[in-house]
Image 1 (cartoon, rainbow, N blue to C red):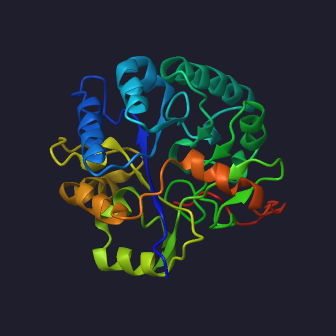
Image 2 (image 1 turned 45 degrees about the horizontal axis):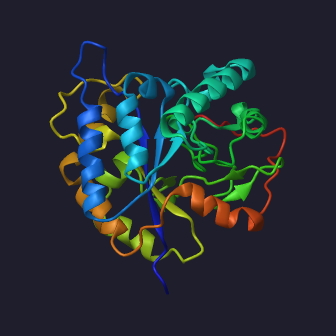
Image 3 (image 1 turned 90 degrees about the vertical axis):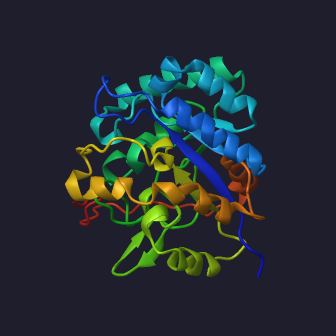
Length: 285
């Protein structure tokens, strides 16, 4: 069975306890871009609009190195904290800002914290109206933060035609987890990650998601409010081996930017119509 292709994606955001903390993500991102250059991999970088305003040269460099630039919100705020009107304005400003920097269309969107859930599905129509051609915003599982366990685990089209590329998940113990992303990729036993990957076929659209801090073992520890004390310890766990795992996963199967893969799939994607009156919550604690 052919090995399924895997796309590398990065959520480019400023992850600090306060503005007084050392600004590390520009250095970390450039180091990561060098490592990706060394293994000949290009992927998709979802950029927070605020980051683009603060570090325009970094965003231009991402594009110049061949990576797709997509939007990760104007600010790193979950969709559930926005009104439809505020979200539409954020998309307008963020998309225009990125397009001015990279001088090409910005067509992909990823909701901060995968916060496209039952209570924020109104965002799908706004994304389509704003000119986005795909979303990568759904975690189809329960999660300590945001998840939509009703959503299909494979790529689908929303009723308005917008393609959705959900986060790849695998069953680990009693639940499903995004085994190719963030803390899960760093903390899960490597044998578990490889075993789940071996069960996938070439029709799966798989992608890794990371953040600059995933590759930063030297960042001073702080308690991340949304993660709590235990979760914050996990956020630091395994950072020294993060890129070695990424490199191993991508060897011989790098899938290229998500936008290209979404375009190749979009005509054949099944439509998913979310059920109404869902008694099952989208957010868990």
